[in-house]
Amino acid sequence: MSALVWLRSDLRSVWHSPFSYATEHHSEVSAVFFVTHKQWQHYGLATIKLDLLVRRLLELKNELQARGIGLNLVSVPTFADIPETLATLCREHDITKLYFNAEYELDERNRDKAVKVRLAEEGVESGVFHDTCACRPDKILNQSAEPYKVFTPYFKVWLEQLKSTLMPVPGIKKVSQSQIFKQSLSTDEDLISGLLTQESDDWPAAQEAILQRLSGYLEEDVAEYNELRDIPSQPGTSKLSPYFSMGSLSPVQVANAMLNRFGDKLFEPGGGAYTWLKELAWRDFYRYVMYHFPHVCRHQCFSTKYDSFAWQSDKILFKAWCEGQTGYPIVDAAMRCLNQTGWMHNRLRMVVASFLAKHLRLPWRWGEDYFMNKLIDGDFASNNGGWQWSASTGTDAAPYFRIFNPASQGKRYDEEGEFLLKWVPELSAVPKKYLHEPQKWSEAASLNYPVPVVEHKQAVSETKAQFANFLRSS
Ligand code: FAD
Image 1 (cartoon, helix red, strand yellow):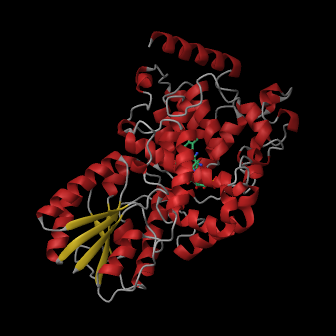
Image 2 (cartoon, rainbow, N blue to C red):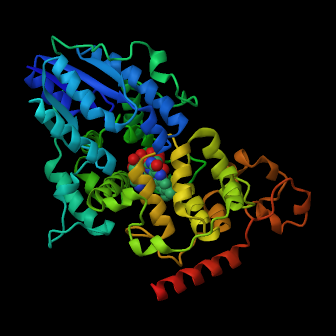
């Protein structure tokens, strides 16, 4: 019996339940990945992310080949084309089983439902696995059998569930037969043709190198996570998010690796490894929210009352934010770093998102789209969750009156301007004391740097008043 593993956001050749199961139960196993240029364009994926994706696919092809599995890269415009294409492939190649990992975004869930129905008509059974999260979203509910809306109680249950379910995924066996379909793209050029890409070479794409990054981080750095995680100039965080976002690391695999290394100490609050594990829970949580409250996938606020909040539609302010020309040094440094490298530190993501929503009062969806269009780790659930948190419209959101002061954030987390000056070199003559508020320096007029696009105190007080009025009248 011939089986097909359908790869999506689980681009790895280890710790992969569909492959483990298929290679255990079938002697012939092939794999398919759909190259959906039009769909990716519609999602506004960053060119640097696409570059890493393409590089990862080419590595994966070789990694699977070593296990006898052929990876077919089949081009179709959008998700809507997949059910029929899969039906054709299964019919033409005598495939009777399709295996894949669940994805929880709304379009993806609708696509998968359509695939199951269409393949059932062809007599092909679908087997669904749940590697995407460390804990399955449908398995965590409160005592009234409803989904949690707040992270802390969710995390308590998540942790217990993780402890009780954590176990290694069996390895992928070598298979004796596999198929390369005539529909499969035959050259690497076919794969990237029509795709705009921005070089992602700073990010390794081979599985082995990705695993080394993980083990290096767990061995050398995670213990200091609590101390260093908020300092953008320090390598205090793992920078593994691009790999989590395309599934080149599985959260179950990572949790297992942590348990092997730290034993039960992993679950003791206060340690760096525990705090880091909690970040993986945040990743799961935003997927959980998306699964149980799919309206967030339809451009709606989690807290739907905010759908009618009157954000400003000021394209000039937005352009200044995008280009890192707001006159707020830490915001500008962060945005310029994002534009050039496809990366931004978590602390800075919170600062610039708060600035867009609370100082400029621009629609948070503009920021969400912009991030998606630039980030190498662009991921719908984490991005949407992060933006809604910052705009005070989401689960567990920052209360509307807690507004980051960019100058204080800059002074606290980049006191010496180590990060800042790398991206805003025009401030290098400014005395340290004024680095985060250069407009207060007596010689500010000599700088080739914008004056602040809004005044901090005034912007904050107007935003608070607008939120308060809105809540009173809604
Ligand atoms: P580490 O600190 O090493 O954390 C380990 C892993 O935990 C990360 O790789 C990531 O998978 C997960 N994680 C950490 N923090 C969060 C968080 N707050 N929410 C969800 N998962 C988390 N993350 C993305 O992966 N893609 C996005 O598109 C994205 N957009 C964001 C937008 C905003 C406005 C904000 C505030 C946060 C966003 N995040 C996003 C979350 C977070 O900023 C990144 O996951 C983190 O900066 C990645 O760096 P790291 O791998 O070094 O993280």
